[in-house]
Amino acid sequence: MLGKWMCLYIRRLIILLNIGGGQPEGTMFPWGNEIVPDGVYRANLWQGVFPSENTGEDGYLWSSPVDSFGPQNQYGLYNIIGNVWEWVADAWIVRHSKSRVLVDPLFQIQGRVDDPTVERTKKGGSYMCHKSYCYRYRVVSRSHNSADSAAQNLGIRCATSIDD
Image 1 (tube, one colour):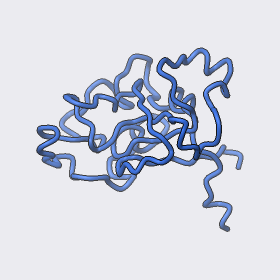
Image 2: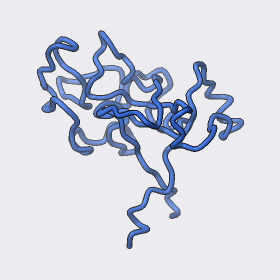
Image 3: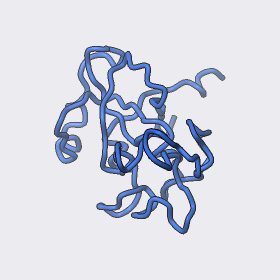
Image 4: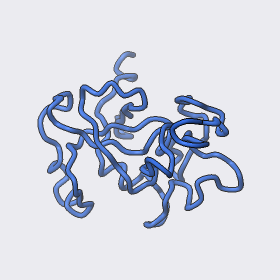
């Protein structure tokens, strides 16, 4: 029983680049180009004046339960953007190349995932992101952190193949 709940691997950046949006290339958010389509919040992000006032218009001042906003794309995935940054297995490089990752999917992994000397890529932005400060909650954006980070707005998403 325990095995069904164990994380088999931390997701790779290429997986997020390929399925993160589920929309045509150039789409800013997993559901389209409007951050609040028809006045409906689709992600947990900062509302108000950053960093002095988060109004919590989306219903949350801090992190939210994973299913709070419903699926964000056509694949039924939750929290692709917003809520907490998603730390991935790939090492951080300043300029990544989607075509290079597709040709050589292991080229960005360096060292142990828990090695604090290797910065890791993170995707999705968090509840602390605001367009005036951290506009990295767009599908194409990314940033980085080390494994020893104590950030309260950083998490991981475990994955397994459908066959498992």
